[in-house]
Image 1 (tube, rainbow, N blue to C red):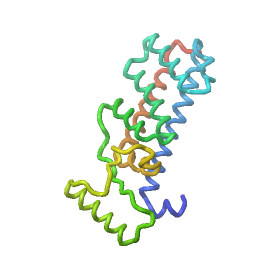
Image 2: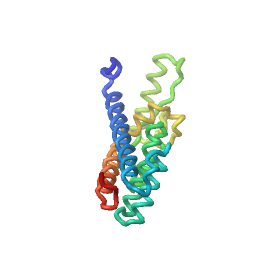
Image 3: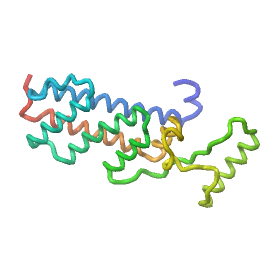
Image 4: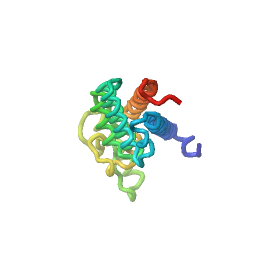
Length: 195
């Protein structure tokens, strides 16, 4: 942990949660490839360059055989998209996929204040206080709701903080845990090759 992270616990929290998403996504990719490698009719797909191609073949195969339900197939499919969007810092698209999968919007987003980098300290404080007052009274001020901003306008760090604030990153972690459990269940299906 560097000195910046020690001074700013929200930064460390955001990095830790992003790291947990990456850890679970890596485990998911390994499980997908292991399952494909163990399943004779799709064995060669374990080595596909894009794991999403392997995942599609697993979904098709196990849906056809019956042990994979439609909701779990959707979970596996969307978790791949969510994984890609979060790891590639396309947070707004990840949130839309999370919303469609869990059926609910995440919590309130952060408010962003765009400031002039050449502004004086006094002007910066005026802008901050105006935003605080506007938020408290429900009026429009210098702040913008991150949920209504594009990723490029919000910036990568702003997008990361926003998915932490809204709880979307926690929802993503839950999605990965659930999809990894589905993959564990599929590993035990009798139609797979026994070593």
